[in-house]
Amino acid sequence: MSDGPPELRLFVGVPVPDRPVFDTARRAVDEERPGAYRWTSPDSLHVTLVFLGSTSPRLVPTLLSRLGQIDQRPFHACARSLRVFQQGPGRGVLAFTVKESENWEAWSTLERAVREALGDAVRPDKRAFRPHVSIGRSRRGHAPHPVPKIETTRDEASSSGFIVDRIDLVQSHLRPEGSLYETLLSVPLKRS
Figure 1 (cartoon, rainbow, N blue to C red):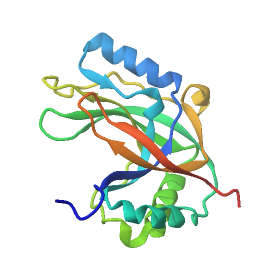
Figure 2 (cartoon, rainbow, N blue to C red; figure 1 turned 90 degrees about the vertical axis):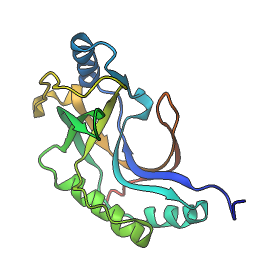
Figure 3 (cartoon, helix red, strand yellow; figure 1 turned 45 degrees about the vertical axis):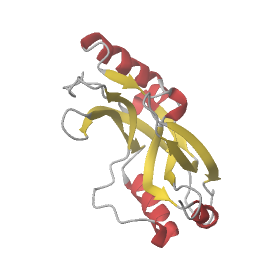
């Protein structure tokens, strides 16, 4: 018997709109390897800043309060290049790296601000922060493979760009057909 409500699987992320370059990538990969990837729903696209994992529901009000204290200016970002991130034997994530218009600093600053605001609620992550938008996951029986080279330039912002103007506290519901994301809170970035 449990002593309280079940834990929530949470992360803090930045919502990303579906961009034409993502559709270009989906079509190109499907032409080379039909059915190899399960595509992320366009309304679930995001950049994970901090993964909290299993979290007590009792901590949610504290997390919401702390996230509301973040002082970070909005910035323009772009999807830059298509990559496969290995996630174990025969498993991989197809993702676009994302970059602030001029450099990586805005993403790193935002990720650091979230970690600092959440303080002891966050377990240290030994992996380096690599901002990216996952657009698909390899299906069982389809090992990740080299993908078509798709890269964008600063001049292609209309097909790959988006504004980072808020962060979300998101609950992830794991399902066989793919995760379902429920935004618990959106915090606008302050324009200071």
